Every structure is written in structure tokens, then in C-alpha cells.
Image (cartoon, rainbow, N blue to C red; front, side, top):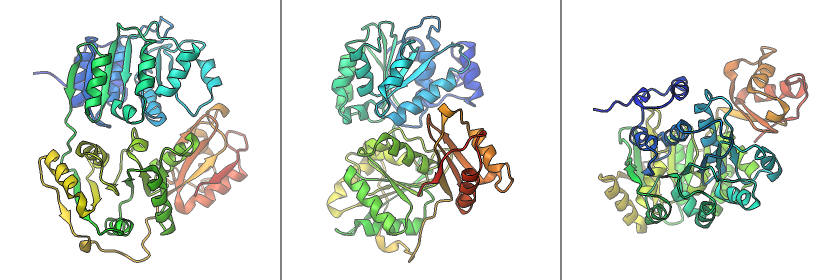
Length: 460
């Protein structure tokens, strides 16, 4: 019988200390199956959904064999989006905090090349990034992989969906053939097998089933009449009144159109899609994550890598293109022991898709009539928080404690009135209880943060 405690693994004391400090006690299924393989330096092909603990698994594996005294890039993690790359970097840094003199660098598009080139003058031990920007640095000669020992492809299925196959193959031309290659994918299309055959050597295959405990997710399907999709969605929101909803559309243009329509009807809603600039994407994610917006409308690709721990509902405005992707979508609700809600709209002509989802789950789906929905006139979902934008960030030496201190110094606001604080290089965001946001804006506008004046405004 194998134990699921991290202490049972043959890893260095510093890593065990970091793992314990983060509150990780028992390994998740993907960690328990993957880590013995990773520590033996074998290639791995793994299917695991977001939130399964896969990032910690490959982070522990690559940190265990890292030689900090060797100033060359020894591990590369490729991610489909900047959001996921940022999350992966953050988790690797947390696990590496007890390892002295380690350098971890994130390289993604949407950021100036100049700053990245300066950071690359001293070779980082670990690089995390998106394929397009990594390839640019390889072609410029600013990023070299002669000493690379570990390559990780995270969310590999979405990287292929986004057209990164050619970039990945070009990057691989600059990487030593003798390496450990770890490929993680939430879904398992034929293309993943083909990529594995090209880039891996006798990989060990692990599948963590993409199913969810029905006790934790209430899943209901609603058939609507043609031309009444938006009307039915509003009825769902009025009936269930979820505090936070992630609504999936299949096309990015449809995302913005739906968000605009819901906004006109009094819902606080934001859209996340490929046409947004990186600054806009960051702002959308901050507002939704800190409870300043009730609804986020997104495509599968745009939502990939989102780490929202408490999501009341997932709503499929469009049914997913396949059953496995549907299961991945709805798995974003019902986490951390909470009961989740998954609602899906479909036309009569899409019944075959609904049947396919039921077959994939091994259980017939629940279909309810739209007539059972109790609508409420003039009903609005009002988010509990509002966000203030501050024109100062990490490079101005602004910390979360400085913003909290400035808001609570007069005792007109208390710590419980302040929500999440997000610090970026040149800007910051702070969530404040919505009824008190005008008072908070006045405090920061008229006062100072860390002895300095910053421009502050409220986001809508």
C-alpha cells in the first residue's frame, strides 16, 4: 500500500519545507501517480483537469533536480495563455521559496521585449511562457536551451487549438533531444497522441478521469425555442440567482454581444475573448476574481487557465463541441467542497449532443422545462464589491499592505471592508465593499499611499 504523504517521496528537505508551508498534506491523485514517474526522470503523458494539482506535480519534479549553481536554463514550461503562465510561475516560485538564489522568469506576449531581454542577461533556471514569445527569444538568440533538462507542455490540447503546433516544433529544434518531456492535457484528442509520438520517449501514461462527483455539481439542461436563447439565459439568472457565473460561448464575437446585451438589462457583466488587449484581459480577470462583477462571458480558449476557487455556476450558452470539453467546463464549479451548479441551453436539433454528454458521463442528464423557471421583474445581480484602479504598482514599491494601511488608517474603513488586492508592475487594483467604494475613493484620492500621491479611479 502506497502512502499519499509528500514526505514519503525522495525529495530534498527544502522542497518538503515549502510544501508543508503551503498547507499541502496529502497528494492529489495526479500528484500521487505522476511524482514517482517524474522523480525517476521518465517522460510523462498525463490527462488531468484544471484544479487537479498538476502544476505542483511538475513543479516539484523540475525543482528537485535543479542545479542552482549552474547558471543556465534547465526547465521550460510552455502554456497557452499569459494568465496560465502567470499562475504556473507563481506556484513554482512558492514551492521554490526555500531554495536560495533560484531565478524563475515568465516570458509572454503583450509585454515589452526590452525588459525581458534585460532579465535574460543572467540566464534564468526556469522559464515559463507562451510559445510565440518563447520562439521570438530563441530566434533572437536571447534564450538558449543548451542545458535544458525538463520540458513541460501544460494544457497542450489548448495550445494546439490555438495554432501553436508550428511554434512548439520550432522551439523543440533548439532543445537537446536528451531531456525529460512532460505533456499535460485536460482533454485527449488524437492530436495529443501524435504530438507525444513526435516529442516524447516511451512516456508513462496517466489518466485522471475527467468526471465529477454528481453530489457536488447540480447539472440541468434546458431546451429553448429558436430565437429565445438570450431570453432563456436571463430567466436562468433570475431563477437561480448565482453570486458568480461563468457563461460559455463558442465564438468570441458572440461573447461581447451577449455581455453588452446583459449589461443593458442591468447585469454587471464582463467579456473575456481573444480581441482584448492584455491590459484589458488583466482588468477583466481582476474584477471577476475579486467579486466586483457577477458574470463573466468567455470562450473555452479565453477561459483556459482561470483559477477561480469559488464559482457558483457555469452556464453553457452554447453547448461545447464535444462531451469531454463539456465536462471540463462544468468542473470549474463545485470546488473546495462547495456544491456547484451547471446549466446548459440547447435547441431540439442539438439533442444528440446532450445524449452524447449523458453517455460520456455514464448517466442520463436532467432536462427541465423552461416553464419551471421563476422570473422576477427588474431583478438585478449586484456584485458585493467594486474595484478601484491605482496608477502605481510593484515598480513604485507599492505593496498590498501599503494600500490596506492607507484605506484603514482613519478607521473610517475596516479591514473587513477591503477585499482582494492585486499588484502589477505599474498599476494596482483593490476591491472594496460596494456601499463604501465612494468613501474609499475619496480616502485614496485625497490621501497618500506610502507617502506618495497616486491617481485613483473606480472601474465600472
